Image (cartoon, rainbow, N blue to C red; front, side, top):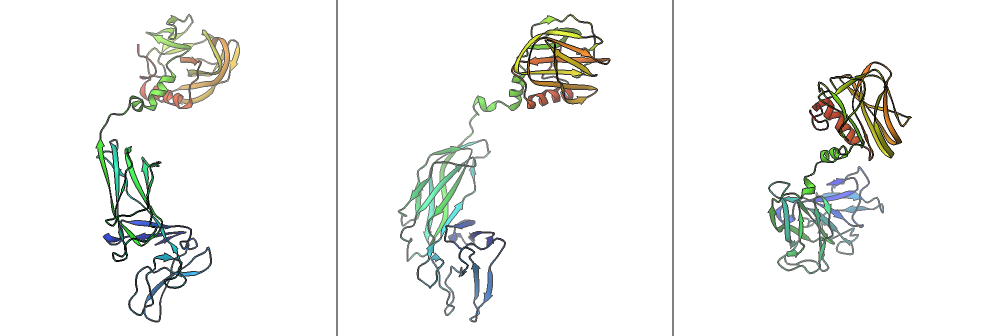
Length: 359
């Protein structure tokens, strides 16, 4: 089989190994992209396959089996043989096994030793001189440094690699520096264990987003319709009428007709302000105007925000039209875009049950 500039051999018998093997090495013939074999039948009725190597411009016969008597087709142990039985370059190959895993993917595998079973292509000739077989290991899809090379293949063909590896998934990559041998199979001595994850691994991204909202500097909230600063627990003295808020709470929205003054905040470069409102508003901190950006609108309520704030002083929210405000917050350490999106979704789709306390 040929695909672009790669060459593969496929095992059709047990003795030929397992599945696909990629033929590698700088000397392996490389057909031009999107080209295939040239196949024809010679004068003796034998089917031949040629491939044009774009690296040198020569055609090569890629037969690897002994032909019938009189066919002139001789088995080649090496590549680019210009004269039968003379010269040529060793064909390197690489084979990847399927991944090993436990009954479930969350299980851990511990493998202590790996066995690769090789056979010579010709039992009478034995393994070729200089044959080396490398084993590379992949854990959880990534290559590891636990590689090994064998340079003395035993007659039995049982090659052992003593590398201790532990992962959810383990995959073997078997490489050889020449052909004239078969990879008949492989085996790993491993144990599978269902072990609980480390506490840190049990933390979800949602926990991180909730953590960003844990320490507000100023937080305008509601307790039974009374406006308070939840950060300090103090009541906020202002003129307002409590009503339904963006979280569907019956008293978490506050209709205001004049400027609403909230406690002072101190934001030094990375601060964030969040405010829900139903009509246009302006916001100042210490008399400095804050530029608001709308995050999203739902049910007539808009969540606006401002990031990277450097301002200190009282927060003043002024309505430019009749409307309500709710859940105004400032954070010294700032709120990320992902956490802000999580907050918006919780309020609009979950009635704020996670981010806004129910009183």
